[in-house]
Image (cartoon, rainbow, N blue to C red; front, top):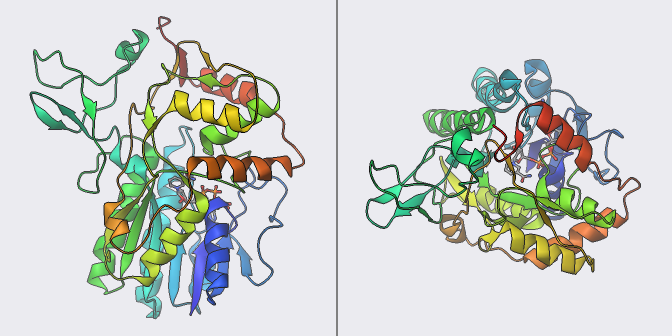
Length: 373
Ligand SMILES: NC(=O)c1ccc[n+]([C@@H]2O[C@H](COP(=O)([O-])OP(=O)(O)OC[C@H]3O[C@@H](n4cnc5c(N)ncnc54)[C@H](O)[C@@H]3O)[C@@H](O)[C@H]2O)c1
């Protein structure tokens, strides 16, 4: 079978491409080579066996050409950022999804399956419980709360002074609050509903924080492993936001590629969504200390009272549904660090860019210090 991978030159896309090739699929890639992710152009790691089209997934004629002779699609191209150009999230992530179905219906294409990249961000602040008032899906914390260094979630019931306990997030309830999360909710709804209407099986993959080799240094969204690794390699201490007790789940990009192909080859989750989460939740401070150990550095992380407005407090997914299809996390956090650091050491430019990113986030009023409202 020949498949199209949109965003196939990217981090998750290229590992998915490699796995597909190793399994005997013919692979076509449509990727715009977004300059921030690929400042040096087409990446060397992209296999020569791939039929490559450089172009925008939200351009109908280019997408039509890319879809012309394939029977399956992995729709992984996305706009991901913290910026305020909200329309770009919808254009690249949601509008393109609608276009895929529009082209299939117009051209009567024989597409057997579509796997789409969604995100843990569709859960917004996630799932918690109050020991008195039960399960809750809270709204994000206010600036006023964060300014008081009051990091934990409060029970929403009037008069209740309990803090909420985080609960593992299953697929049941979504409540995104960022343009990115909303664009992924829209992608999921289009895929699920139009897929069912036109009998084209679809699965939306809600990845937690994906890490590993090829995660671009230049991608504003590529996260904590890159930022902290580059700080540490340059002998600078990582800067932790809030108090470091926030829980997250991280997973290896090779496990994600396997999840994508599992969902593609299995009909058990058709027309629905699947969490693709890490082995377990870990506190940011513990995560940082393991990384420091792996890199054999003698520094202490800095906790200076900074917070990023819009960050969630605790988000950890459970992947039980995906595991029932035969998938499991094969790689540990140590594997992630080892493979990532090994890759980083082979890169030509390992400059620490934290100060630059910090300046932009401060200018945009995203990064704030508690007590300075
Ligand atoms: N990395 C994570 O932790 C994570 C977590 C949740 C969801 N996701 C989702 O997984 C998918 C892949 O993410 P990634 O981490 O590999 O990101 P990435 O930036 O490495 O890859 C995305 C690719 O899409 C391409 N692209 C961007 N806009 C495009 C457009 N308009 N037309 C064609 N190509 C375009 C980029 O050039 C890039 O190669 C995305 O949909 C993302 O939203 C990633």
